[in-house]
Image (tube, rainbow, N blue to C red; front, side, top):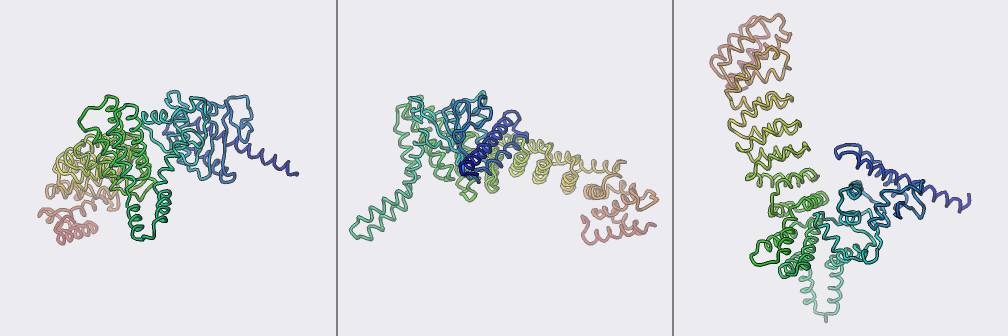
Length: 571
């Protein structure tokens, strides 16, 4: 085969591979549009797309698609075989000014998921933003795109787009290589880097010009190393807000402040973010005249830090920086305005960092003591692990006010949530918690029934004693498994003591043909359960049973009597 023929074959193979990947991309988007989020079907299509795309990127280095009108091109060749059919995605990208779309090596599954969700949102009928805006806002590191200038419209300042992003409260750190917006974002990045590498280079150049004064040079180095760049940036931004009175300039200053806050959060610099949020709140609370538009913008910027998008950004930072300062994050969250409890439960749904989850739960305990009904609303979350955390928080808050929420948790369809409710109720004293524990005696889980039973027997709850007495006398009790029979009988002895002897006599003294039958085994379990009693009548009855005709009954009675003597009952 000639070199030219080999090149054509290789080019055709790569084009065919790109065509397959574009087909997978469309299938994944179609699944996202047709199926609800809870369905596993979209996940299967996304995984198939990621596997194929990751293989292509590892072999070829990158996949670049060009959108022209209603078609995708790869290396100048149409991707679709039926080039006359319009491609919906390519048409949407072209419409919103996006010319090329590139997938780069190192692409992560989470980033591909975010990209697909953005495209789905941009293609929806109710989408308020174009795809260029949505992609610009997103933290996409390994998915790049370029936009085309469209006369005066393409040259419009990035502030308009950023204002729309702030109105939707959707901060992001994504970039579009080669677009007008990227030029501005890259200039910001270069300025930030100048505080480190560039600043160090300038410092070295200045020190080189000093006339051999090493002490002075060392003083310069000390001052440079202690320079608080973040604190200085915060002070400057807040000064601008305090002095600006013209509405358009004030709005632009607010956008700068919000961008700085997002950068602090993305870098897990929670102390700097807290100082900035506190500064905005202080300006908002300060007395004095301020134009109406400026006051409204400042209030919006103040509340934005506690909004859903900002909390999502914070959760992403916590997941990506597992060794960050969680105490600083707690201080930031504690000072945010508004009702933070619903946002914290949303955070529990996405936080993967276990210490961070525990920090959020601790904060919910402290905040929820005054808003315990809001904590109870966390049990309405469809995700069982969020509802379980809500039950745990209620248990840690404790007290009678936690019982209404725990009652809801005790009836949750998730066993893990009900288990947390039982554990919480065992830490709360009083009639309400005992009532709820009695309700758990009929739970579908044997372990939960017995856990509630053990706690109620320790409380020696009289009403529970009546329920247990009724239970062990039911005909169906004979079919209960042996361990559960033993627990119910022991609870009856612990709660009622000598008063339970008539029930035990009915179980023990009746004639049993075979000791190894179900009735015979229940009889022996009743004898051993008497070891939990400490009354004189129980001791006398055990002495009587130690002389019974049945050897197995005598041995069980002697065992229980020894337990009573050695441990004073409650064996």
